[in-house]
Length: 351
Image (cartoon, rainbow, N blue to C red; front, side, top):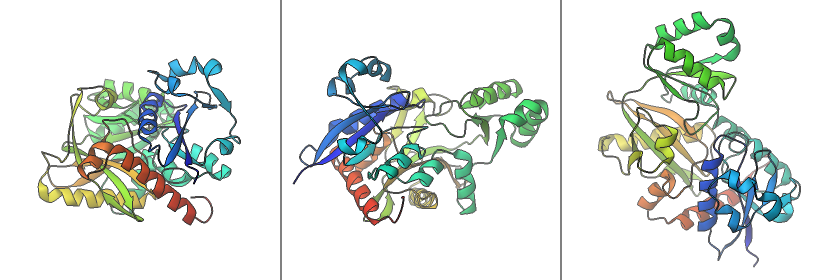
């Protein structure tokens, strides 16, 4: 039998392209060569696709790769992707890769891919809409307000006062459609509120203003088994900074992660897993996802950041939690591919 040609799509057009490179490189390295024929597909910052050799995958940054594409890579048209691969392992993060855009392209091409379809992927990137859906499903989420850029530009003083009166300080400002804590500000006073809103508006046309939570932060990987989602072991997050910043997430030594948790009561762990699974289902996620949240001192569980995909660098939550279940990286990656093939065979229309 011919091996399945698995295209690992990495890089991309978003602010998270370097995270994508780390994830994609690790997926490519850990694909079982006995079962799959891996192909590295790089998306540059203009959205163009390139077949790249290992010499480029191993580069330190996406800029390093981009500077060598013309000489060492081979350009692929969108419609030509079907001639290159049988399956897409999406290792893109952020806008245009994790939000339904690439998923829609792959649907048009008839190529199966990892993760959920267009709608669920879009929901996985939009924090404001996520919260509305989860709240309607009876799942706890932080108190928040969406401030659109037009409102801020025309009614800045009144809007700032209303936000301070509602939430007090500290509070968070964040762009609703960014990941990896990009554009997020911990706001401690009125002056910082203006800076926080302006920073978020660098990344989107609206700002999500959210209450500050005091409690234990957790991350839960959800993995489907024969169509049924289940939570792996939880991870408790203890960042070095005042909140889980980009550097805490990706710089070595900036964050301690405990799998299983140390500071969350044992009787709460199963309740957290159940809420994480409920959020996964409510948002229409498939195959796998990462559900982040807080366990508060009063026992409440709030879901703060549902993700329809997960980072897959060697030290990611995904592989750490999978290791607790006895799964090596190659086993996990193979599971995601096989899950996706079943899901796409069963769909009726776009996923």
